Image (cartoon, rainbow, N blue to C red):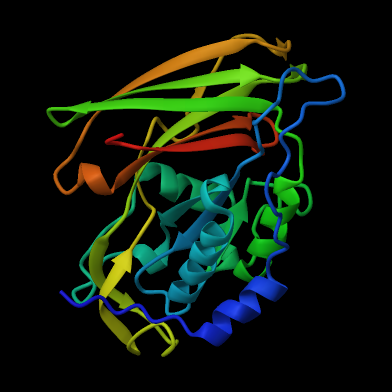
Length: 282
């Protein structure tokens, strides 16, 4: 099957110099201030790309997200949230990648009014209650988030056997922190192929890419807002919590193309404080 995904060299070069501020290794690896041992712990960033197969501009946003991830590697995690009117199946576009959490987030963060393509970067606020960021600003916002000190260390370990995923997510606090924190456990899938509307000939056929490759598609979450990691509301350096998840894979979820994405966020502000990604089949 021929996959149509052409990215112009000019677009890539332009993006790298205008949209992202590259942070060279070794990044931030040394602890400091009043924190614990933060050696080799870096702040990672979640880009949420709100998208749909009926959105003609969304393939371009997917390219931007992929370029940022290519630039920064595993320090950037991408989730493609298919939700809203642009993600509804039709006779010509029958696939349905919507799930309950994505639909709820789409409404809560007001993407219905903002339109697509748009997204969020670590669910940071531009102003109180305003989280939505245009793809043209994803790069600079990501670079800014990565300049922050990591306040939490996360690890994900998974075992997949007989169509069942068992994962353990460990969360360790590196600084004293107050508040209530939730953990959202997600499964994403790459390499899903189907029709996608498109208006950029540099990316693929217009007005429709018949065999478009959908990556980072949100497939599962442990509820809309996850679970509170602890009843505590004040955390000390070294506080550690292990959370375990068991998920039975549904038809169409190809384990070798799936990833676990886990992130911790502040209940009140919804801001993400750390994110981690791991393969389903390690």
